[in-house]
Amino acid sequence: MFGYLQVQKSELLVREFDAYKAVYCGLCKQMGKDYSFLSRLSLSYDCTFYAMLLMSVKRSCKGFKDGRCTFNPLKKCKYALAESDCFSKAAAFSVITVYYKLKDDLHDSGFFKKLITRIIMPFFCHWHKKAVKNYSEINEFASEMMDIQYEAEHSENCTIDKAAHPTAFMLANVFALEAGNETERRVFYEFGYHIGRWIYLIDAADDIEKDRKNGNFNPFLNAENNVCDLSEYMTAVLNQSLARAYDAYNLIDIKDFKGILDNMMLKGFPTVQNSVISRRNMEVANE
Image 1 (cartoon, rainbow, N blue to C red):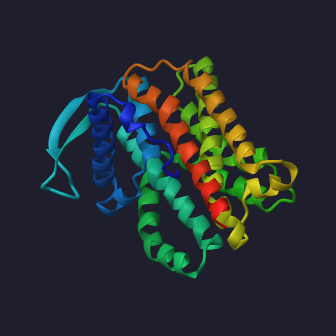
Image 2 (tube, rainbow, N blue to C red; image 1 turned 135 degrees about the vertical axis):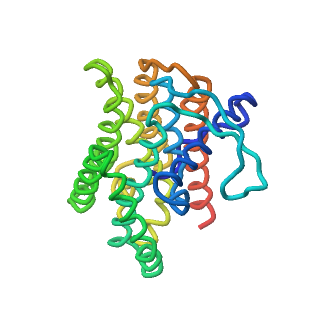
């Protein structure tokens, strides 16, 4: 994923931010254990959100342990402890999604980015094989997403909904794996779908001016001629996804980290969205 699922640090209690950092560090440590030291470079806020959600639903956090940062041994930190496979699943999800993102970059990137991708791709191929052994369902959803995404982006007159559906569909199915019954499955599916839709569209909004200059596909560019104000249109579309996601989120039995997850849903994600739209407006104004 892309790193947009962030907390609003200024609105968190100190103990909540410490807990958030402990989950982030715990996931980082698990990635090194399951794959390698270098795999930690693919760690994102998005997968930290996923790990925290899993730990909350399964109530698997069993406290925190003092330690030292792997990257900076001089720095003390805390690690969240989980008795289930929440960290391993989130680590696998990170590796799998980055693997497919790199495969996509080999087709759609410029020379230098392709060169870098080819250098690091063998590492992710190896880690991807390890991740698939234990989490084949996640890989199936991610692989299917890439196929559907390619078809959508190369079809004529691709709409916003059609372009965002593959990522939304993938995350919906991944989240639905955590359901214990059909009612929970529908709630998790709805939540994952609209979070995934928002992630895809906020990334598109963030890249729109770059994609315009480089001639790359962007669903908002396709819609530009049919709206009066593109920024207002992007904001409305993104707000719709966040609102639908929040409606489903309220139906999930959040047991732990509720203050942090509420912060992300109500403050963190909207703040990221506002920042992206404001930055785009500044780029347009400076042209």
